[in-house]
Each structure stands twice: as C-alpha cells, then as structure tokens.
Image 1 (spheres, protein in one colour):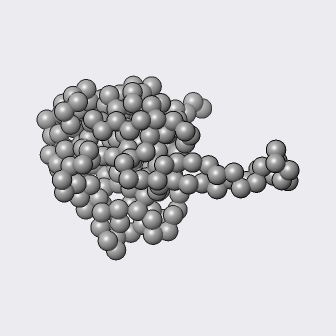
Image 2 (cartoon, protein in one colour):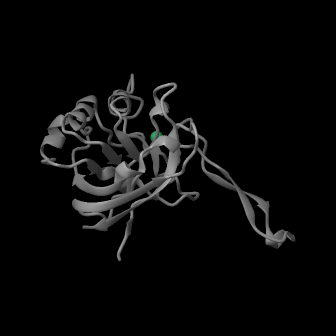
Length: 208
Ligand SMILES: [Zn+2]
C-alpha cells in the first residue's frame, strides 16, 4: 500500500504565520547529558504546519478541535490544481469541474514554498467568491497548501467566516507538490485538543 504523505515536517524549516508561536523542541531530558531518557517539550501554535481549523477559530463558543468529525476527514478527496496566483476565486474553481466531490484539496504554487523557513506573505489564498463557490457546490472539507486558507491579512477574514460558518472543515498547510490532480482516498487525523481552535494533523493520500 503506497501512501503519499502530504503533511509538512515539523522542524526548523517550518515557516511561522506572523504572530503565531514558532515551532521548537525543548530538551527537557537528554541521555547525552546524563539523563535516563530523551524527553522533549513541544512549543508550537495550534496552527503550526499541517493542521485543521476548528469552528471556534473564528466563532467564540463554537466546537473545538476534539469535535471535528473524523468521518468527514477520511474518504474520497479530489486534488485540483489552480495555477492563477491572484487568489482562488469562483472563476478559478469553475474550471476545476467539481461534481459529486465532498472533499477538495487545492494545489497551487504555494506547495513550492515549503522547505523555506521564511514566511511568504504573497501566498495564494481562497477569496470570498471562492469560499462561497465551495459552499454552494456542496464541499464539506477544503484543503489548502499554505498556512492559511485566507489571503494574507484580508480584512474581515471572509474565507474563514464563510467556510467555518457553514460547518466546512478547513485543512491548512498541506504539501501537494508531488501530488498529481485526481481522486484519492484521504486520511486526515487531527489531534483531539479539547476546546482548541486548531489541531496539527498527519494527512496522507492513497491513489484510489
Ligand atoms: Zn489554521
């Protein structure tokens, strides 16, 4: 069984969304220092690397990461490729011919930004028209290939509000660089962080 890992490694090369806690490992115990074992403490944002947004990310009192329905995060997913760098809008999505798709992963030039520890503010995000298009076409899970579904510092965060407000699950931080467009089986399992606004996840695809 061949799995394609579309999650990004958590290491020093991981870019950090401005204002979020940079990822690091703190050595609490080290065998090399005379301890009996190696034990680390993690420092990270709930939105580090590949992660799923919980509804309470943008809606106070809404469910946290532990309530994300895993049934929705496992199953048939379509990878589409959008080459426009001006944002993923309704026009761009119309060309992808989504039909009968519940889960869509949007591959853009963003996937080529991974490996650079610098945060690239000019990444491609989903516009308000794109978010509404996904909602109107019955999409329940949308995945994007950089640290936010939103265009950088977009006033009012319309994509998050449209998607999370409609109960659509947003997966961010996928690396789709080596994935061809097409239909896959997706396995996305976010950590059950109770009450948390997001949760890191390992995401793999299997050709279906
Ligand atoms: Zn997020």
